[in-house]
Every structure is written in structure tokens, then in C-alpha cells.
Length: 167
Image (cartoon, rainbow, N blue to C red; front, side, top):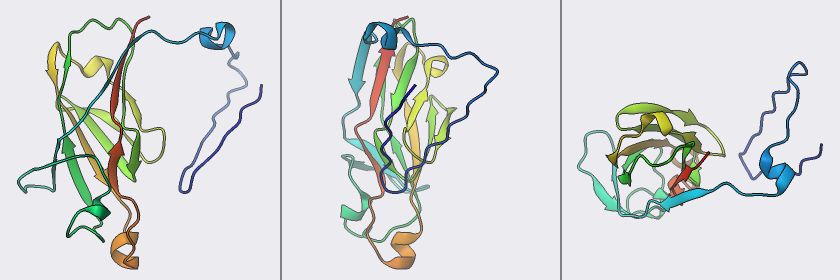
């Protein structure tokens, strides 16, 4: 088996290989097929806020482009909603696209996980309800912007998608 891997700046990849578990090819590898289902892109505006401050309505972009946040280091919270008819009979994945640096996700008030590097994707099937669902995403950047007075990309850049797969 071969794999081509390209890591961007600040990305990491960890492989865990258990020689006691037999390797199986996925149907997509065997047949060249693709998964079926629907993918929805969560477009803005997003509600973005810091702790108990009133939310801003903003499009996904680096904080360093926002007035007064050029050298901000800390955590901002993003909220958005999407509809689910409960029709997916397979996994549902929330993919944040690009985020800098650490993303912690909740869906409908329940924790979905934390990611420190790509891929920023979360399996959220068990957290969904029929009708409106609300992901909450806390993104924390590094201290480099504050201490080094640089403007490294920060925050949730997206695109954020929800993929409903059929089994």
C-alpha cells in the first residue's frame, strides 16, 4: 500500500497501525465509487462572539482582517444553524474546512469533539435532531499574534459543510 501525503505549515499526521488487525479495502478503493448523499454548505452570516459579548454577524474570514483584531490571540465562538430532516441513514459529518488553530465543537449543546489540526471533521449523526440543528464552534488561535505582533491566519475560515451519507 502506498499513500501520498502533503502536510502544510503547522499540520501534523499521526498513524496508528495495529499489526493484529487485518487491513480491508473500502468499497470506494475497490470500485472507484463515491459515497452517495447530500452535502450542505453553511453560508453566513455566522454569529461570532467572545465570551459574554453581543454577537457580530460575520462571514468566515481570518480575524486578522477584522478591525481591532489584527493581533488578537484567544477564543471566539461561532454559531450557525441548519435543517436536518433525519433522512440520512448513514454517517453525518460536519467538516470545518480550514481553521486556525484549535476547534472545539458542540451540536445542539452536546460535545462533538476537539481538533488541533486538519482534518477538522466530526461525525455528528448521534447529535442531530429532526428540524433545526445548531453547531457551536469555539476556535482558539496561538499566542503568536499577540506576543510576536504578527497577523497569522486565525479563526474559522471554512468552508463549513455538513455531509449526509447513505449507507
